Amino acid sequence: MTLESHQVLPRGIRLIAYATGIRWIGWGMCEALIPVIAFSITGTYAGAGILAGISNTIFFVFFIPVGILFDRADIRKVLIAGLLLFMISSTGYFFAGMTRLAYFFVIAEIATAFAILIDVIGRSAYIRKTALFGG
Image (cartoon, rainbow, N blue to C red):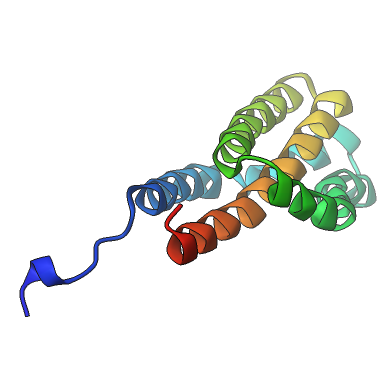
């Protein structure tokens, strides 16, 4: 068997894999700071838990509606929007850390929740669609 006889992954799936890897490296380096920022804003562990729990609550509530969105929308455009939301969330965390204002932290948590929803659901939907139907 030669290398040419193996099927190569479609370009879109490779791009998603690269984008995911790059995002996970960047996110992994900064994620540990989120509880520190939350605690610096509230000064209590309970307050930090409430602030840090915003994204989990939004994720739980909007999981199915975002899945329905992917049934109706262009997956690629929504995935790009999700990546842009990660930039908004990281900017929000930066400003929350600099100013110690809960307002920026809440915006960052909301953007993070939707970005993760779009990433998790959209990535899976795109890969399945591309693998099964060729794009």
